[in-house]
Image (cartoon, rainbow, N blue to C red; front, top):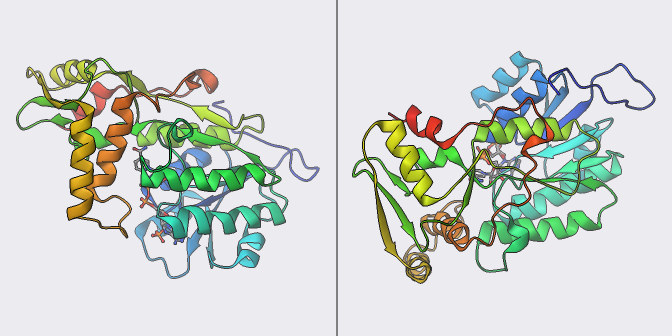
Length: 311
Ligand SMILES: NC(=O)c1ccc[n+]([C@@H]2O[C@H](COP(=O)([O-])OP(=O)(O)OC[C@H]3O[C@@H](n4cnc5c(N)ncnc54)[C@H](OP(=O)(O)O)[C@@H]3O)[C@@H](O)[C@H]2O)c1
């Protein structure tokens, strides 16, 4: 799908497909906008009124239409969605955004007659997890139950952990002490996809009217031992493994961290990242089968390359 994509809209066959994008000023959303424009789509970026982030100007310069909209108004959102082939959400937040805000966006997409909706999931496979094991994914499962009842074709993109997190936020590859820290089994396969690859795939999916309910991708499936080899190859320095304990230890640490630092209004308090790691190390949310080959022009960035860029 390297060629600009043209989807027939309202009886016309020559206009590029219009994709409505919520969250285009965010890290992932901005990259989705870039990837959509590269594929020839018309991008309508919905932004909150008064947003002065540099991304707004950058998006406009790239050719996106910037629509300032009241995200609390279904009527305003409906007007903003008119004529689109797909609504893509890359919003980030807690219940007010992921459940309530996306519900308004969904209602608007349906009211405007938009045929397709991609929610802000971009995660490990939450369909395999039970409530209570990961707060942020509980919210996504809740929203998706509503999405499944709506008269619209829905596609969720599941991409595992953003590989980029391995160079900073996720305490797994410890560059200072040259260790790969883990709990449980060093041979458990884990899914990693760069933010850029997730954005490219989402853009391709947004322009593809034949997508199924779920699409699962992983730029690389790596075990902890694989991460050790990648870190060693990327830095030229030998990395060792550091097993903190069985998964139960991480579970107990999550409980203690939650009690000490509840931070219930933060999207990513420390215990939230730990919940993701715990989920991944159980193997339950492992993505399978993978749809990596669906858009053959996407080149999947390996973990080693991301770690090497950290040097
Ligand atoms: N799998 C992974 O490892 C991983 C890692 C990171 C993120 N993600 C997921 O990727 C998605 C996007 O995350 P991100 O990191 O790109 O988020 P981000 O950089 O924080 O961007 C969030 C976007 O949502 C918008 N937004 C937030 N609250 C809003 C509200 N109440 N009304 C309207 N717009 C609102 C922001 O707009 P403003 O510019 O107005 O603030 C911004 O455009 C999320 O689903 C997130 O969970 C996955």
